[in-house]
Image (cartoon, rainbow, N blue to C red; front, side, top):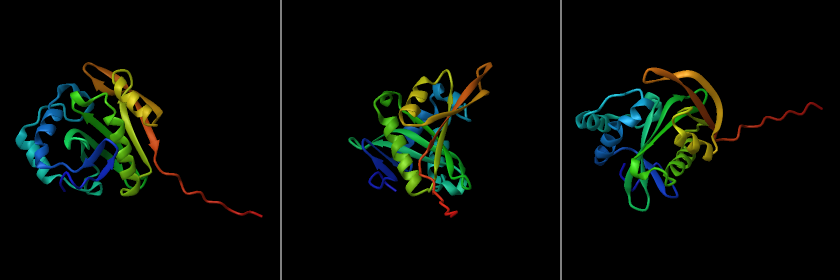
Length: 189
């Protein structure tokens, strides 16, 4: 897949599979220590390891329960961030969404555009009914605002769920039902 064949495109962004040309973007985001506290991999990654990841990453959500997509601006054809679908549950038709933008691209509406694009893709092609996100309740105000603005409901708070430094912090679960459930009507007359 190349930049001309997006998985999903909506407005100012398109989502596509990672390409070898995205190595610098992955290297920048994966090695940003300010993002390590929200990942399960709080350590630097080499260019070699990331090159291998790009070359061998599964291309389907069903293959390993996760899928990484590159967020690309449509006006410049430049990669600006990553969007991951993880925690895929086929039976319940849901996945967790994680998003990271380059620092210079934050606060410009690309995050919400990427969420809308992945929602359309998840509904139409992956047949998911729900997307959710785990957000640090007190520290990650930008993510809380993003998911709230995108129509995600703060469904639950998990107390002391995530380790941050020497303490444990609460996590807010944001969820969005992206399809309309089938209505079964019965005639009891």
